[in-house]
Length: 225
Image 1 (cartoon, rainbow, N blue to C red):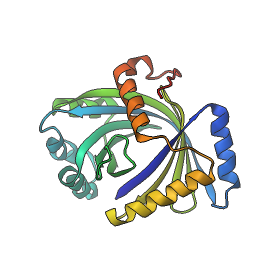
Image 2: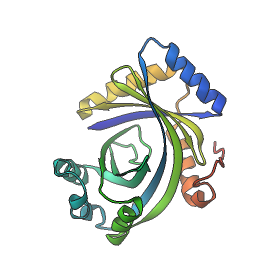
Image 3: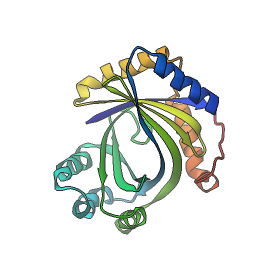
Image 4: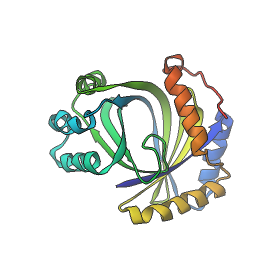
């Protein structure tokens, strides 16, 4: 599965409310799937740590997910590994880059996301034991929507970043990625949103990683141009 996503920095609660209004007025059907809080822990990998994920995670994920785990480990590049807690569920999330995009913030990526039978702390400990180390810890509150039958929209309030919107479409093959990007950018324009440039996003990501303890679990934000 290929994940294509485009972000837009909203800034204020008022801008987030205005976006929701435009979503509701758009000709595409909008379905609200609710809101929840998330904790996301990002990891850096030492040499060999990504290769150890299969044996580390296999006992704690459904048997049907093992093949997908092996696929992203062997096929993907520049893996980004994170753990997540959302409404009591704990997940492992692995993203890998497609083309020149980064696995952390790129427009086009492949993704593995699966529930585990562990607490967030226990899952973190497993990763730390096989050679991962913390990159940063993130907290956010998320509103989730279906925008038509093929696009997902989220409106987040992230520690550090403030309000952020994301349009996402999943496709089955790399050949469909470009068309998905074009659709999302068309919708972005119709919603009167400005795409968050990848270089600015990378600067924001880097600043947060260097200072995450000042923001994690708070409402503090920063502005990086």
